[in-house]
Length: 75
Image (cartoon, rainbow, N blue to C red; front, side, top):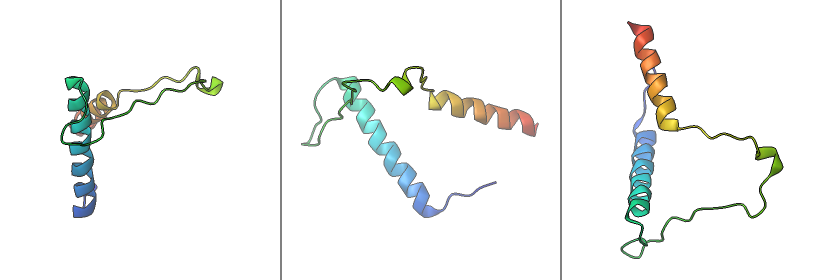
């Protein structure tokens, strides 16, 4: 079993907080508050043909399946 030291756990907490702020700003549909820059969505002007068949994954769903598989294998 791996352990998370204090440094990485702080980084994870910082990233989580920042991501929650981005999600909230997108849900609000308005510009960032308190003078902070708003998130910018990048869109390719000319798509890369090698990425034509690329399919993204839902990381939350993947982690949920991974977690359940580990629980199931332990019982």
